[in-house]
Amino acid sequence: MSNLLALLQRYYVLLMFLILQVFALVTLFSENNFHRKEFIRHSSDFAGWIYEKRDNFTSYLRLSEINDQLALENAMLRSLLPENYLQLDSTSLQELNVKGQVLFKYTPAKVVNVTVSRKRNYITVNRGMAAGIEPEMGVIANGAIVGIVSSVSKHYSVIMPVLNTKFQGSVKMKNSGEFGILEWLGGDPEYAYVKEMPKHVYIQVGDSVVTTGYSSHFPEGIMVGKVETLEDKPEENFHRVKVKLETDYRKLGWVQLVKNIYKVEQDSIMQQQIQMDGGEE
Amino acid sequence: MMRYVNIFIFVLIQALIISRIQLFDGLIIPLLYIFPLLMFPFETPRWLLLLVGLSTGVLMDLFTGPPGLHTSACLTLAFFQPIVQKLLSPREGYDSLQSPTIHKMGISWYLTYAGFLTFLHHAWLIFLEFLRWDNFLYQLLHILLSTLATLLLMILAQLLISPNKSK
Image (cartoon, rainbow over the protein chains, first blue to last red):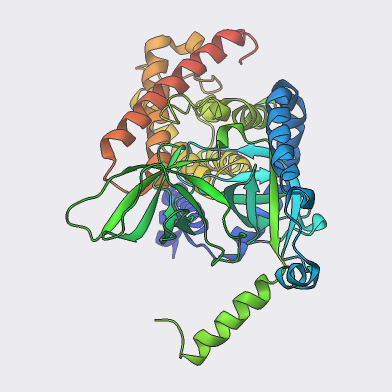
């Protein structure tokens, strides 16, 4: 017994180090850990508040740039006003626009912190649960994809942008309609890749890549980027499409959080089907 | 007491200012927030140093990145700091209440001491973050250049803080 105590006395620093280190690594690597989630929830409230203070100051320096972005978006929205469209007769209009129901709801939010240089980047914005933000909502800026809300605290949300190696999104080519999966491999914050596009499909350099609407995070046809080059490898059956992203994450000022009102319904009917088929493979 | 406040101040400086300086698309990211940790006096009890490392890391994790990343790297730093000090100790030993600074220990001693520990911290952090070896050369370059940038900032910080204040 006294030997054990002596041993403990001798190595307690090492022991303490190992215990704390294991605790840190478990927090780092287990995705669904309760402590981890609580930590993120509280830390984004605290850090978000401080980041917002900084941003209140630094955003003055970028006002003209933000103005430009807003003006552009205004012009785009104005072009969507009903006056700009040929009026069809009332019966067909009603069919088009089923009882005038809204599918997607938009909430604007100000970006208070962005990182682009890590492997898993995150964005903090100043709207949270109090503004009706929920995890899994889509995020766009100036009509282009930004990412998906990953966690929400009372007044802030943390977004997982495309620039995060864990991000995956369903996208398609605007012209050919062929779809694939968007992912980012780290490194350059201007480029991402589309995978799982079969090799027999012809892909035009310069074609736009847009969202599909399958994933229920985004409306269909939100801009992702333009095809830059094909980096195919002879041994693979799929294209490796390099895409220049439309969103410039280093200049992100305001974003819009998109809520799909029927997301729960859309996902639950899918789940039901999967369960009826006996679970996912 | 001032040491503990310093930790908080440097984490804030790191999160709000330095982390925004990302040279060459994130190839060089200086991490100055470990500076107050490196300044703890010789012969600080090791358990205390570990606790200080833990709180520095947790504080930094509050601001950036996946939780646990900076905590893990800072714990490693706090564990090895006294070991490195022991390896580098001069023949007559250290003055126990002294802090390891350039003014007291000389530039070459300080660069060896801080250089080694900063490299250890950065290497631990960056490998833990990437967890893959296919980009080994890039990561090595990333670690080396970031270490150099951190060292440079540490030297500047010490020149700015006057010697009698840094006791």
